[in-house]
Image 1 (cartoon, rainbow over the protein chains, first blue to last red):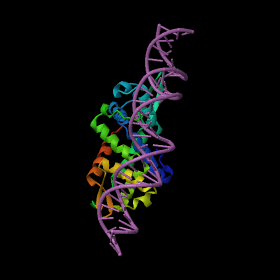
Image 2: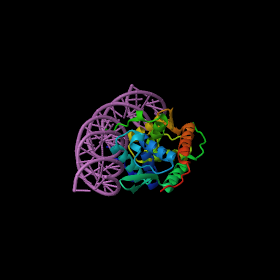
Image 3: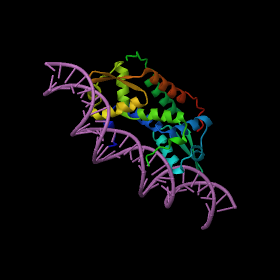
Image 4: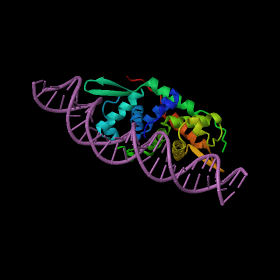
Length: 107
Length: 107
DNA sequence: TTGGTTTATTGCAATATTACGATTAATAAC
DNA sequence: GTTATTAATCGTAATATTGCAATAAACCAA
């Protein structure tokens, strides 16, 4: 089917899954890591940096924008992408909450 | 194409993406949260708990096992699933590393 | 205006994912 | 033995994702 039955889950579960899904592709991880490394906007050097076609990179960037992780500022013919600090931190907290649980190893 | 070009990325990027991909479905988030809540093995009550068909749940469980997040102990006709503590913590660290970066908001 | 640069979008092909019914395999209960 | 229970697997249909070439859109420069 390929159709996720999201109505069966809570908003929190769907939001977390949507975020993880966007992170679930190495090209998007590479984009995020590059943005974290340069600590600045990136204006189009991603195509050479990552090595995928321009259309493909653009698509990945759109998905990252969809969950709010990135924002794009138009600057002439270029578009400067950078991380949305608030959303970035929010996502960090979400994962932190999920993985901070102390397990009392049962098996 | 639907075929990720994973050879273009580092092992670390591919591993992180693979983990995030598995977390990128609300049913698998629900499974993980249920396991964290009961703090014990779950032996098959997931089908009623989540509300998807048995075959579907089994498929989701397999994906979570593939990345090492869950392990299943056979107990008679039942199989008890629980979180692999080591991998769980490892994944927590991976996300923590990724999101701990302090951004100096550029845009 | 014309041409160059950059990014988004469209259209498409190949592959992947999601979901479930049906079946199978393994054990348990009797 | 038979039957019930449980979970994995198979097969299949519907939908999603990935990737790219081609094109469009928007701006800049001369």
